[in-house]
Amino acid sequence: MKKLILSFIFLGLIGFINPLQAQLTDGHEALKKQINTVVDKVKEAEQPDQKRILLDESLTDMITAIDRVSERRSVSDTDKKGLAKFKEMLNERKDELNGNNGFSKVPNSQLNQYANFVQQDIEQADALTISLTTALLIIIILLLL
Amino acid sequence: MYKSLILLLLILLTGCSTVDIVTETKITDVEYTAVYMIHGDANYTYHINGDRLQADEEVVEEAIARGKASASGEVFIFHQKPERKRFLFFSKKDRVWYHYRGGELVGKGNYSPQGGGFKAEAKLYEQMAGEGGRKMFFYFGHEVPSKSSFAYHNSQPELTFNTEIFTEDISLFEDLFDIVLLSTCNNGNLLMAAALAGKSKYLIASPRNLHLSYIDTQSLQLLEENPSVSNKILADSIAQRSFNRLSSQLQTLVTVGVYDLDVIKNYIDSFADDYGRYLQKIEQETLFSDNTDCRKLDIFTDQDIPEKGITLLFSPPAFGREAGLESHSAWGCKQ
Image (tube, chains in turn red, purple):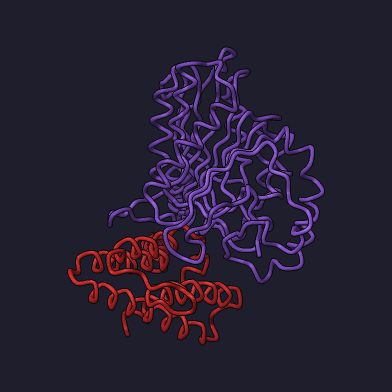
């Protein structure tokens, strides 16, 4: 009888492993949620300077997080290429926001639309083809910054 | 003890089975058949005005609405949800199919994938689809890659999926479709068009990134109002309606093309061959990247790729390097 009870407990545990792992590792979802929070904050901010600072700091934080994740040995070469592309995209968005590297600075009146553009560009690109765990690492580092 | 274990095993196996409603009779007088293949085994979250939306779930809702409105046709919906295992070994049959005929739900069930393409779906279709009428295949998902360069199905990364598998597997449904719609990023490209020539009369696709709010298919209503409407008018209507919505909602580049494959097949092969050879050289460096306009590639600077038989709807992005872009060719290429 004891063996039977133990068998039930064992099967019950392995039955829960997969859904639990899926929830813990859905880094893409967390990343998109993080970006949406930033966009919401930008729209809520009243002053253009606040909006620009919020966007600039968020992009900088994400670039820093990508750099730190890329340095990790456990990250695959494929993910490192994906991260490099993602970083390139974020750097370009930051340049445009501030009018660097040949871009005209985004006008104060268009900062809300620009926040939408950044979000749509990231969400529509299959740029988040980095693995779920690598995306989750970015989120963890973002939370620690 | 053994009896108890056998009983336990029986309980587990019974728990894994599902009861399906299977359409028992085929019909021959169907005016049209639309197949919605909706990939959901990856991240498909997007936001509109702060609201979180799930692209695959949104399309399933729209497809069901089309099914309910299909008074003279039939609609198959295959929702490729993540496939989980019960107790590590037993498939949970997480994918869901629906079959609407004459506006009624006549079949619904769960199934598991067979490979990375559409083999399981094609078997179900073969059992139930009516004969005759217009045939359409609508795919919603991330870019169908030219080669299997990354895991397409998150829950089963070992399953491969690419242009070759896509074009081979849609032939398991029908020898020739009237319209194939690819609501994906970057599949308005030479390799996909060349592979679909002879398998479909028309292709609707985007040569560049396409937002997850997708191409919409409400124009199927035209078939209810006028069953003899031409494929071209129907395809143009689907593209135009989607383009109008996408370009009014988005700040990003929007491109939606209608490709007449009967015209294109007369000139596409040599260009597709050139592009295929080029891709073999550069693909490792271009994973994850958006297409660019093929006109920018060195290999095509001396020989413009014809655009006969194509209508491209194009709206430039409000920001970014391509803001203010005045034109775009119908072909997207990796760079």
